[in-house]
Length: 33
Image (cartoon, rainbow, N blue to C red; front, side, top):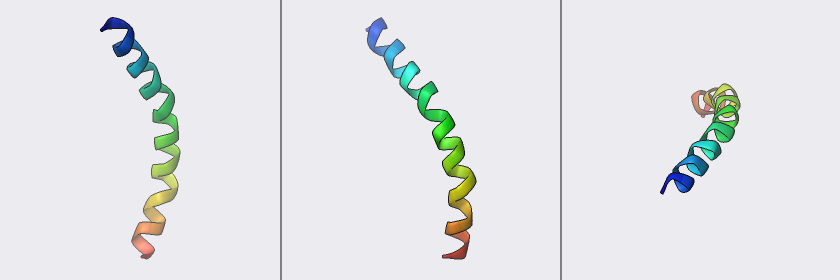
């Protein structure tokens, strides 16, 4: 259980910066549409 949770946290931490970049670019497209 610990290994899977640590792996999950690692994936989330690695994925968060990508979400941050997406949230910077996406809102403009959403507001225009």
